[in-house]
Image (cartoon, rainbow, N blue to C red; front, side, top):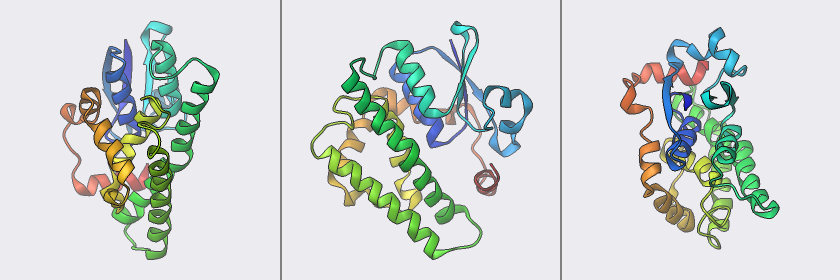
Length: 220
């Protein structure tokens, strides 16, 4: 059984998708960002960085894992799913996973903040992050012109990228400008486990009020 510490963010949805895809039993542990629960001592013992997601594997001596990419790798290795065991195949998945962790997530996250939440509108800053987001979408689009999924076969790399691409409108980026990425987005989005994973944890909590969401993004 996995204890899954989560709230409504693209990074946590990577994990809910993976848990559903891998059919791993899990229990949701809500971490209310608006109440700064991620900064409390008990949670910092699980994730010293004070961010969601985190997991605790009850079947492995209550082993805690933080950072969404590391959690995806842990779950894939635990189940033997969505991460090849051969050196080349594994490397391809890891390359795209690291690409998401180091590029797509941080850049689109900044686009979200400055385009939607930041109290002062800074056009040059918004343009900088939106343009980088479009460039990264172009990288995916080029790759997906030749492959159905980012690593050839469906993998944790796709699970990592999908929740971020799902926020393209929130970042002010038009997905229809990228034909191959749009095809991939529709394809992945039709997977039953992805449909369920993208609803976690909405069905388990009350939605934030708009002003609470602003505070959450700017203060956490």
